[in-house]
Amino acid sequence: MLRKAFRTSHREIADLLMEKKMANPKNRVEIILMPLVVACVGILGTLFITQQQERNSLAKADSDRQVKILEIFAEKVKSPDEGQRLLSLKLLRAVDDGLRYLRKSE
Image (tube, rainbow, N blue to C red; front, side, top):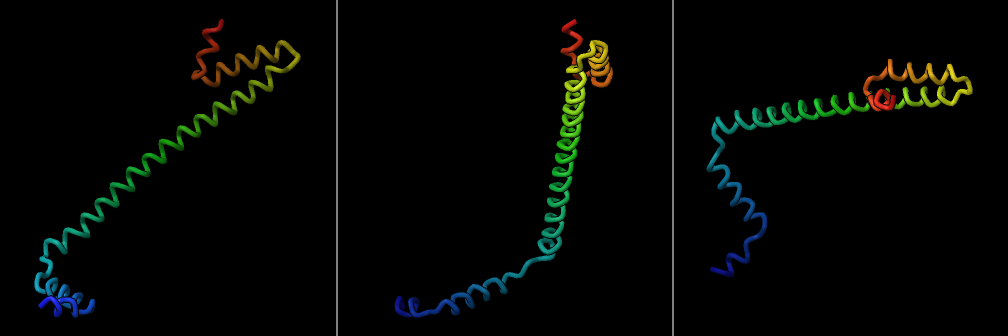
């Protein structure tokens, strides 16, 4: 009997497994639920990723805006004219209230 078991080929084993699968077909609930579950997971994953990307893009836009304001401020504050320097400080405060440390220094 062991010799016969060792003599079976891979094809025979595969055929036996297929016969067992065919004997136990999927019921209608499994056929209907699987695509629904896959679709729900895909939709929820897409929503999560989209929200995360939106938050990241808003944060990047805000930081880019602040960097640009600081670049303009740095350019104007280097001016030899004292009026330009004071104007740059006032403009910086007016444009971006997020930089509160400038108000505390007065």
